[in-house]
Image (cartoon, rainbow, N blue to C red; front, side, top):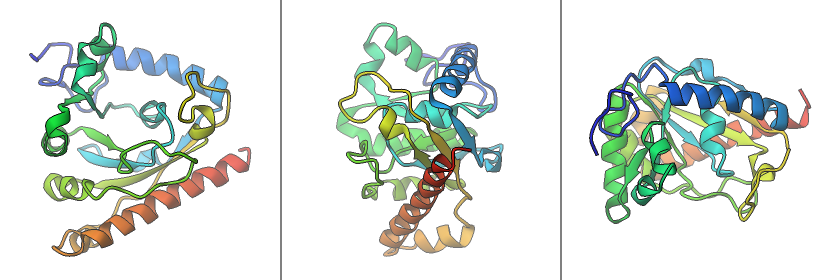
Length: 229
């Protein structure tokens, strides 16, 4: 897959602090739609640094990547199956919205390698460590694979919690329903927390810490949702 001057392809993602024309256009349209239909609100995103960072997010629905990227003035990179890039129109959009194609046979190592490369280029990378969407709206067990990415990338790590998206588009739902949604960006893990958690033998402790921090953000988002503010 070759690079491109539009800043949207995999090998040449462009400026990590500047949205390309397609990302910007879709974002403006979706901001209007989501605020009107879902009463979308987000907070805490001003904490994100100007450089690369890893966002660890609870996975409620297929809309989650959009919900996290919506309030930001810079792009977020996610991963998607490589075969989707060969689907007409879908592939064209994915190539131009900073999505990284991942081969199913080597998914684990490729995610670590390509995500690390993006973050070292200064991009935000979003990851759903549950590995799949929730079945009941609650945070499921995290897969420990993200620990290797945290260790290799050496960038700030931020928990992000989404509430309401499960009711908008649960598993098996083909079309989103008009429900409220909130997104909370939490404080980054401290250097001490990362240093301790990345010591050999402490990986399980880091998984527990990240689980707790994502759950805190999701709980704050649920409380915000319930307050009708």
